[in-house]
Length: 256
Ligand code: CUA
Image (cartoon, rainbow, N blue to C red; front, side, top):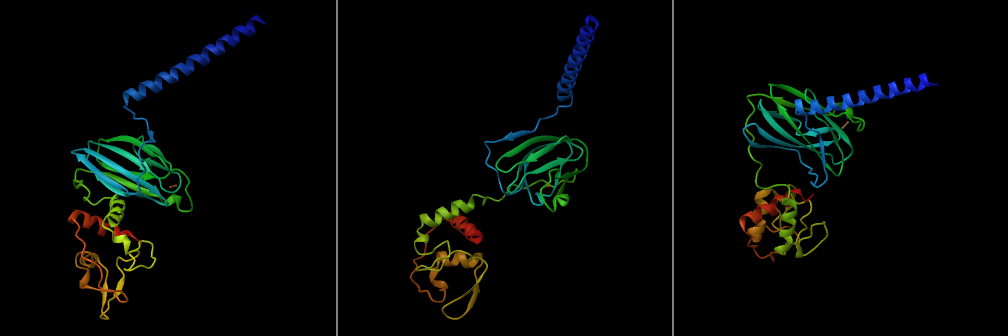
């Protein structure tokens, strides 16, 4: 009986030492190899557009969108020696993001943004794969990060951004456009704005024009220039500041 208790104590002691050693090794490697633990950010609104942003020499931020079945942006280039902040969002289902040759292995979960920081020291290509089964074409979901001295500097995104949609829609209300022009396709004193962009329009004189950007701009500023068939020349020219006009046109282009 005594011998048995002695053996049990030894086993417990050995197990404790094993666990402590393991914890110490993990803590040490986090410090030694400056491993950044992935973080789930619940206070950042998930984005829907993939973007590569350059904050300075060797400083990048990538907003990755993982969706069936691709990564956006799929193919980026950064300079050797750079630090890249990776933000990851998934609009549809849960995906995974593993960047080969780095310790980045993130989950892309709908509703939240996941974050990791990675340092690229040497030139080379890093394959990105989805490691979470996400449907029929899961296996084809891939991307690449090129680490190369030839990486072209990233120009900042144009001033018309993703919020243009919201702002443009608000402006349509502010300038009372929606009083006559519906945005849902319903009939009104003026033609609906829904699905307008890019389509061919028949005018009162029988001619056909395409509703491109120039047409939209002209029809807002000088509505009398082209009157759509079955409507009349009753719209007063809208006086809209240039930046607001651009935001409106940008949102009209996306109003499908
Ligand atoms: Cu995305 Cu598997």
